[in-house]
Length: 275
Image (cartoon, rainbow, N blue to C red; front, side):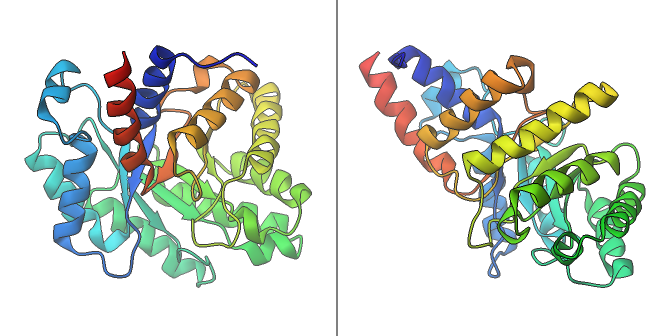
């Protein structure tokens, strides 16, 4: 196995940072901790000299918050002059269970967009997967796609830990893509099982099949359980070896994470000292 050099490890570290949706989805989220999250997304390193050396080009791809906190995120990013550079993702549609009336789930999407969200992370109703009601699932995601319109990115969270089987994960991936999802995402981060490499590979195979059938590139977002740079590197290598280098950009690959940035900063400083 080829050893990753320090210089390569440093590059991977910065790449993982640029692919991260920095997330807070806690019951005690407030305006102030969302503001801190946004500042951290824009200025991920505590040492300002590092930012100067990187010419301010290194920031996370997005911040991800609840719909009621989107306005806080928008205000914070606007004050930092980063609204056009850092996306605002909002979970919606009865996160994390998805077990709410369809009408309220669609209203939640509309509310988040009105507040300033540029990306919506919907969560599918896993009961439809477990009972094989694929047409119903398709119709619901089509309605959610319509609610997002053309300009807002839609990421479909499958909740893989509650889909029952790998076959169901594959089928749910295909249905979500056919219904108009721009991304498929592993998990809410609230299930017992979240992003694992084997389930990621199943979703990648679905993305490859969909690309062969339609010519459309769909993104992948592992979320929950990606806590270290080494975790992130394993995912990036798997993407490179399967989907190819062109998928390793924020338009087609994201990490949904809250703790990953801490390890990114720690590892970046450690490897920079060695170089």
